[in-house]
Amino acid sequence: MEDKSLPFTPEFYVKRQEEGLIAEKIVKGQQKGEIIESVVEFDGDGAPGIGKTWFLRGLETQYALQKNPGLPKPSITAFVDLRTVNQEPLIFQELAYRINLQLPEDKKISDLSGLSGDKAVQVLVNQFDTLSEKHLLVLLFDNLTCIDEETGGWFEARVVQPLVRTNKVLFVFSGDSWRRWKTSEVRHKVKSVKLSAFDEKQTREQLEKLYRVISDQEMEAVFYFTGGLPFANREIIRLLRKNAGQVDKIFAESVYKNVIEQKFLAGIPEALKPILKLTATLRKFDPNSLKHFSVALLGPEYYKEESRYFYIDAIRDMQETRLVRFSSADGLYILHPAVRKILDRNLQVREPDEFKKGHSEAAEFYRERLEKCPRNGINDLFELMFHQAQILGVQGGSQDKLVHVFADSLKALGRHPDTQWELPDMTLKLIEKVDKDSELLIETLDPAVAEKLKMIARRGLQKKADFLFR
Image (cartoon, rainbow, N blue to C red; front, side, top):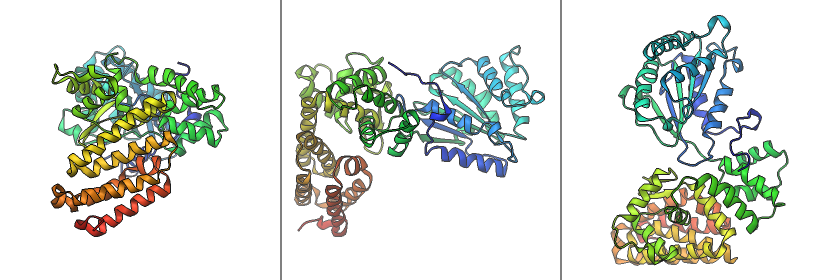
């Protein structure tokens, strides 16, 4: 794949909202002389190409000593990639090397190459402690989840813990999941943050830095097919221009080959790929729903009656890819939202009949669930709205009919004997979904249709147990 590992280039860097947390800690550290919650870990949420390395490189550049020499306690940075520098002595040497690049000759950290591991630890920690009297140390470690458990435990106990005690060093980590910090002293200093994909403004800024001039049509197409994933933004604009700006099957197939296959599906067992790709149609799933859709969309051979735990195992295997995770908010499993959008929207152009079939099956599934399991009706209704909107998008039909489906379904839920004691809670759930489901109400529905759904939901809050309609 072309341009697969673009080296960090400051002029192409796009700032992210998560930088505000680091800026706040550094400012307070410079003003007060100490840092609270001095360990910050950024989780890329398992999405390849979300830009964890560039994010840390941007922090390294922004807070290097040369950038802020006039401050009372200027920051100084060190960046270490734990994917490549993952042995005890090498980690120390890399830290010292990165710090020394910013210091004058008489202030440099001692050469650690001839020291044993324990001795090197002690010398480095002592020198960092001395250095922190005049500088705010910002230590950046990329790919934390790449080091093994033994090395991670040693690193925490011998480097992180003693420096955390000083309240003068800021650790910033990135990884594909949270680390299980073992010592309570470190755990109490940890702030965990999900690293988000780009929004439309950031996506445009990225594209304009790469290509200077971006048309509105290009911007709309790129953001639709990438969900704001930085790597995908870069690749898809390249492929779109290569195809003369045409969003057609040729373009979709090139995106599938260069982005989906080589970035998202690389290394995933062949037997797992059909099920993983199937989850891109669904916003959430569990073993039972995964089995239902696998049989319906992939074939009867996926019934797997002989293996009771087949789909539990499949979900576990998908979790190991870090593309799938359990959502505590939904109580179900989800494919990473940006990855899901890329896969599903690519299928919409590449195989429109398969796209329609998948969303039609999902719409029918949730329509039946509304009748059989009305107590979960609000969640299922919003999924029904989402899948119906996808079908209408392919068919070119008006979304106005969704308003009637929404209102009629709420009426039916309000009259169902199984929900009478649940109506107040269901109404509050309705308002919560209206406030939080931006993918449906902002990205998917026409503004006028979305406003009509919100109006119906607000009336539901006012009427509480009467639940919208008499």
